[in-house]
Image 1 (tube, one colour):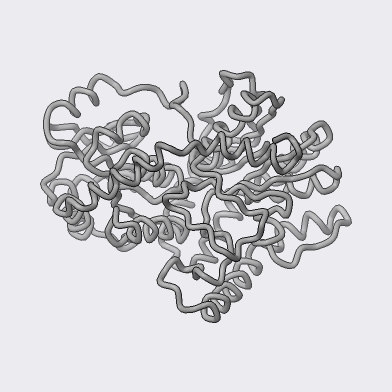
Image 2 (spheres, helix red, strand yellow):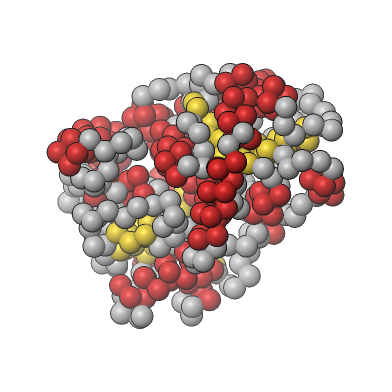
Length: 421
């Protein structure tokens, strides 16, 4: 197995790796983390062999530059081009070398949908390959348009998908084809269907409560559910100060921008001011997650508690709602906890998650980081506080999600696809 990205791209693979190992498979997992060295030295409770390479991909200075430019870039394809240039390109050679060694020894390869180096290495070695999609937005369908907005009919949706895939291919296809051409392999025409998806099996790692499989999905695309796992050592436990804050008053709003929280002190300070002012304008208690809040000069008080980090699975159930960036993992963790969301999207994929939560009735309209103000964010927070139906709906969705086991279903689908069911 091989994955690349931030915490939300790595945690599902850790969960699936543990599940496959528990089912009797011998699993090796390669991790490339974009923005930190947090996974150095990580171990598996069940004996998964884990290796970390080319991590972090970006220096702290590059990460600051990337964060500032990415969320100010309104064109989704320009955003994606910047992500690839700064976050993927520098690690591609190392990831491909590791993928070739992995493919030489493994019977089956499983990769993050962006992981064309592993797909190519598996193809070279003649080994079967499974792709893991962390968002159902990547599966084309005539029944749902790629913008996440209301369907405009099959013909209109197909046209939008054609335009979207053409734009994606203009940005993404050169990466995969450059590597393929260098190794004398056939080129791909469409990244979405030939790289992101596998004809053998594509696991769509999204809860069925959020994801709506469409009638025209290819047979290989299977929604397995959220690839979740209990908190592991890296995530820690609830600190005493946080536990005391939770008990001291009304359920707070938890605010986190995940890996999109700026790392440089001036920009992080500005973001903290935005979140703090929004909480005060909305009149809510808040827990604000930021790795350098002390260096930014902020101090906790009765209304606002600042934390470096906290285990989301443990703390979200005690909160009123979650203000977040709309990452796949945070979105599903908040939903699994039975909490409404307020989404502050930085890129188009995060906006998609925000729109899905709005469709489900457990969030208002997502806002965009490049334009949001404290006043506008406070209004979004007030909407959640003043709409009891969101809490009721979120609890109902969570109750259904708790009946699912995405890891077990993924393990079953892998076994079924390769004759081990």
